[in-house]
Image 1 (tube, one colour):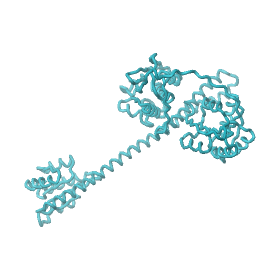
Image 2 (image 1 turned 120 degrees about the vertical axis):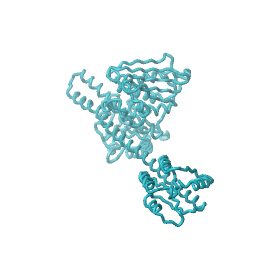
Image 3 (image 1 turned 90 degrees about the vertical axis):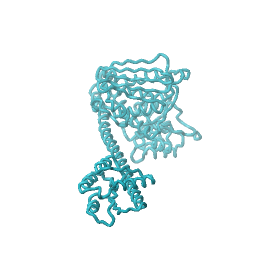
Image 4 (image 1 turned 45 degrees about the vertical axis):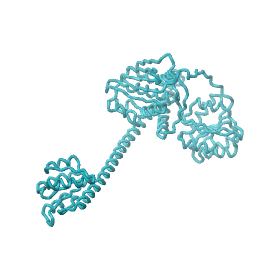
Length: 520
């Protein structure tokens, strides 16, 4: 804001060096431009009254912490004016330029002011980025706390009927009807606990990008029927009406049957949980061109429009109803979206809002029907005679597993420590050792190494542990284990191991089979 002649001359000079200049005809116009944003201002002292200086100072005092607007004040030559002194005291970042100003001096001062302003903008960017990251961390921390509270709640839920069931079994005597009812309840609750732990392990593997997808041609109808069977108990317990539309003609996919079944089971579980008693759930599948489309719709409590994307975020639980009453860890949909994406598909959520129900749509690449291989029913092989040593410092775990193995026709011995296991291997001569890892005194890794040192490859070693991360698998392999099972072991997987050849020649290579999931 200079005199008319100075303003025009200065603009022409600065534009030649690529500096954009706006001329303000009044002080009000100058303040308006400052509100819009300016890198620096140049003012002739005679154009700024004491009142104007106060107005400018008041505006500059509202600057954010990162900002210190450069002010170039053109003063009369040789004059030590009151206006200049007041500006220096009140306006902050002031540079005095005595007139007449050399062209090089003006250009240099403007460029210096603009460079300083540019650094301020960079600081602003850093501060905004830091605040954005801090806010994200606050949100994640809040979600973590909510997740831990939910996890505690979800783990206590199945533990209550398990403990009650144990007391009922103790008191039931010969009441077979009570025993069978409690047995079924406890079996469901244990399966629920296993699913919670499996989901936690799955999400850990997905976030690290190391989940294993085993692709094979599979019929979509087969996947949906398996998912429906998995969730039938929950749907029936809630009294929901279930309507399923699956084409009679197979819809072929190339994917991991276990993972995709998990996706559809998660969607059905959500539909059952978030639909009030006696609701309606619809499942449909069809081929659209080269894509397979599955829709899972309910008439439940719905989702707010602004939450349709966030329902897929890690540990995110949109409060579609009472979170604590509906349950869940908030990772099922995250798993579903990741698994669908790994199969080249996508999953979307739709809802018209609270009380209108929800629909989840899964789209996957479809194959030609000719790619499907007919599935043959397999009959489990009869267990051959085996001598199995169970090693676990948890006596309850060792005793119950041993009882189960004996019921399967296996000869069993038990050791409750690593040192006892070494003696038992020598005296009992087992074909297979089921060996816990986390034992005091001598852990499973050291026990395995000593068994290998004494007996080479004459015995099959199976790690049976609560640790199932990839580092645990690597340590098992390095310690000489043949297989790695996570507690509680899947009975069918255990049957496979017990049925396989138990003894190996010294020349036969050993390859650790990874089995990170307990129950699918």
